[in-house]
Length: 327
Image (tube, rainbow, N blue to C red; front, side):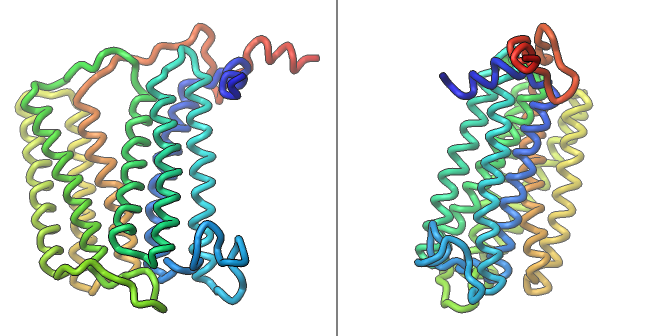
């Protein structure tokens, strides 16, 4: 029998628990991005010089490898924590009644993204921190964050057909904002790949052969585009008297963009210190979460359908499991 079905027969999680499990996936997706950045910024990218083991003869780092080996290996181990959190979200979504296949599919999509990104991480090490593979590693983590945010949103709403809360041209403007923000993040990844933080101080790591000042200027240009689109969307939503939710999400995104821009400005004119670069990576996650929340807030799928006997806490045992536990 399917193990998830066995759990579903014995446990009914509350809607709140499912939401919290989905939100935990979002948090862990951000954590994995930030810790991956820490590996690079502490010059620990090759702290474990091979993969899937840490060295040719050891699964874990040896004392001779120092702190860089510990940092790299710790980041690898966090992948298992992420898998556990995603597994919990999948299990909770599967056990919840009425069953919502969309949630379990989103959970499994995260699982396969985690697995594929683990392989990309291994290729990153085996290719000596090739900047194109490193960039792919970050973008795959961003894809994981995207699915996690969508699952979190879906856990908070019903399963009715999506109903637009604004006119089609406004939705199209939000699409342009999402695409522009995605391009902004991609260009930022290229800036990183051509910049000075290669990830390992002991080896001559290949960099993307672009002028870092020119690609940074393009990045700044896209910041202005995204900022302008965000302000434009705010004015449009106010003009069409959109619900308060979408307007609030746009204001939140504007605040995150301004903070992220300030960090980027200080970072650039101080020769990209490691702490600010790491903060900027964290900010990129917040910007992406914010734009997704803006986009998803512009449609409605109704309220959640409660089960016949809803639970208020983490969940409750089903009658069959209660009988078994009383024996």
